[in-house]
Amino acid sequence: MNIDRTIDNFFKLVKIDSPTGEEERIKAFIADWFTNCGLAIKEDLYGNLYVRISGKKDTEPVFFCAHMDTVEPGRNIKPKINGQYIVSGGPTILGADNKATIACIFEAVLILREKKLDHRPLEIIFTRSEEIGNYGAVNFDYSLLKSKKGFCFDSSNPVGTIVTASPHYERFDLSLIGRAAHASRHSEAINALLILKDLLGTIKIGKLDEDTIFNVGVVNGGKVRNTIPGEITVKGEIRSLSQKKLSANKFFFEENIKKVIKQYKARYEIKFVKENPGYNFAGSRTTRYIDEVKKKITEAGLQAKTVVTWGVSDANIFNNRGLFCLNMGDGSEFSHSENERMKITEMENLVKLMLVLVSG
Image 1 (tube, rainbow, N blue to C red):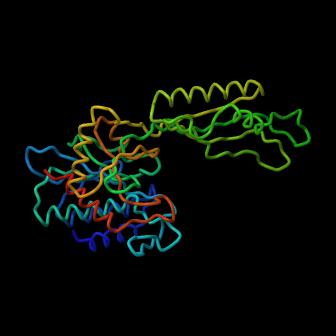
Image 2: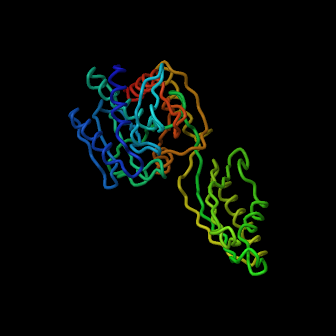
Image 3: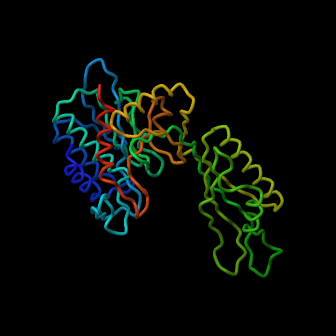
């Protein structure tokens, strides 16, 4: 492979600002790149990109997926090489999540064509708006896709890592509604802050069990310092590797809200939104295929390992659609932070793995 070419493409990609919702420039760059390679690229109604590269007849097609958007702070990124790593040269993320994968897909495609390697039919999907809820994958035009199996490379783990389980994920917005009054007139108020205090005393925050996490991330309330707050808003989430446990904890949470609200003669409003379905391949019929992928990883000269993650990716959506998609380690480190970095040898490893996975 040509690592200098891969790094050059990666630098070009991360220098294009593409925070979620602003993917037009990166989308145009990717489309132009494939067009210049003589490959047809399609855009669906949501703005996702799709490429199909013909391969050996009578072989099962496979798809690769990467997302085009990045988190903030992700504008005016200045990548630089620091020893064995590529890092950000300023107070921003690097954008290796997920542009290192895009650069490695470019390199794998170039190698397939330059060396005229035999390979399975390859479909490539570039999604929008992954970082805020995998909306690109949710709204992808699945009529384009022929493959039943595929890979996302979107886990901040060493190349060769297979994510075998990812949680079901629901977020909630809760309003605890009492009655505001001047700080000197307690008898006229229903203090929403006290409602929240008592509610938090009935629930556990953090890791509930080996499969489930409950988190409160944002609390807002009050308008001025001399007023008893009449309303508190709470934003949080429940993640679980078990849909049954998620549903049970969701029910338990709302029952406790009702009890506390009744004591204060207040009211509440809550909205749950299912952000992502989960999946768990442990001990399932997919074990045989995962073993085959492990052999491919070994064939690429890498160490195979499996992990369970609390994060979600486009793979969650693809699996919920009836496809079989493995999320794989992309080699990036410290994603979603200004310390994000990408080891250059991991880019080489990722290209090697992609070539093995698409081989006939």
